[in-house]
Image 1 (tube, rainbow, N blue to C red):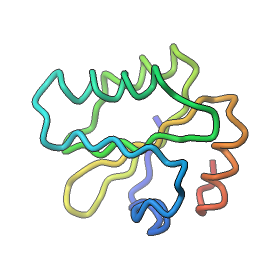
Image 2 (image 1 turned 30 degrees about the horizontal axis):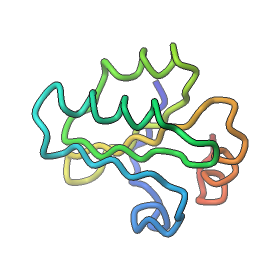
Image 3 (image 1 turned 45 degrees about the horizontal axis):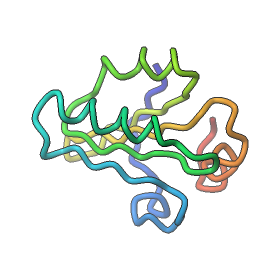
Image 4 (image 1 turned 180 degrees about the vertical axis):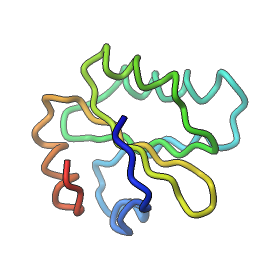
Length: 105
């Protein structure tokens, strides 16, 4: 699993990248968070990485993402929430967006 103890860069947190798809599932009860992010993954568009915000680490999501050829990076926020970046593994546009935001992927 790709995990980082730091938070998302401010550029991404403030959604300064118009192509970033924010999926906030913090208020949803199970299985709502998993269903919601899988719907976003199903409608994934090239160059539009997904940022999932969750109050728990969605461990069951990670194998599903790998099976569907998605990459992800987990961030634990200081307020005990998680932010998970998700992008298609072969999406070079999304990869460049995330690199420009300061990620070493």
